[in-house]
Length: 189
Ligand SMILES: [Fe+2]
Ligand SMILES: [Fe+2]
Image (tube, rainbow, N blue to C red):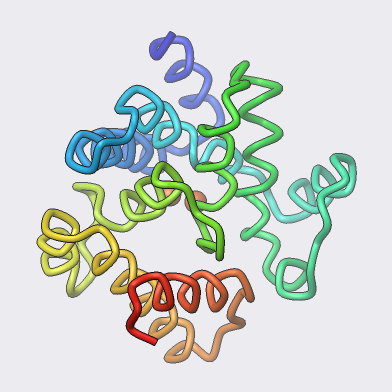
């Protein structure tokens, strides 16, 4: 099963992205074991989370339109964000994934969102802390991830927002909604 997926992914993704996907898969499996989620589902969702990441912007927009995915203004300007919802379609069509929990984790891995399952949160966080990541502060994020899932998720949202603010980038509404929902759940607000 995994071998077949890896063969196909190797055709769709650059070697660097394939390595990243393997890293997310193993980081997600570790987090699942730590926090009581299904390890096999975490491993699969991690491996496939970026399955549409190799598609150019025009194909992502086309695939979104063909699949009835509603594209908001931010996604129209930054079609790369569509690799998450389009990834759900590709994971189903090309990799035979039917498990709604795995598909949901692929769906929300990029932006986060206001309603995240444990598996969604794990794959979202694993995308940041997989062994190949080397941005400043990743060590602290890994320590947080081992200690507290909500604190690590909050730090991941904050890191994304700080980066986008520094870059003058567009902020996806799901990221703002996701951070707000998390803060309220943590009773920090
Ligand atoms: Fe991604
Ligand atoms: Fe990723």
